[in-house]
Each structure stands twice: as C-alpha cells, then as structure tokens.
Length: 60
Image (cartoon, rainbow, N blue to C red; front, side, top):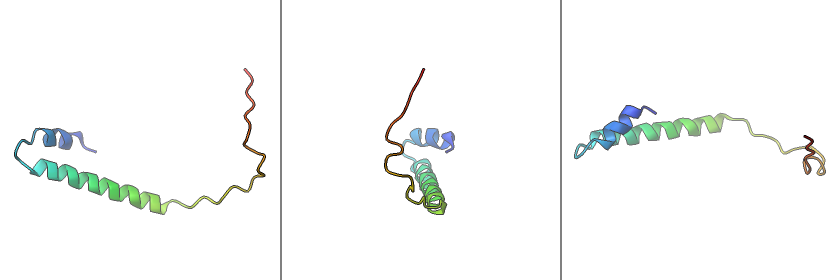
C-alpha cells in the first residue's frame, strides 16, 4: 500500500477525499487477496499413517 495515501488521510482534516481514497485502496487490496486465495489449489488430506508427525527428535 502506498504510504503517501495513509499520510494524506491522517492530515485530511475536513477533506474526506484522502480518506475515501484510502478506503478504496484497502478494498481493492482485499479483493486482490481474495482472488489469490480463490486461485490456490486445495490441499488434499494427508495420506501419512497416524503415528507419523507426532514426535520430534532433537539432538544438539
């Protein structure tokens, strides 16, 4: 996100335009993230036996 939009919104005073621009920018970013998440493939459930992944062996 462009930081100049945030600083302009914080200095807007009675001018609603920078705040509206910030809200629109955040909405557009949210829509972009939603589209990316929709495009990700679904991960199938693990086919490992149930005893795998329960313990961690650590040696230093």
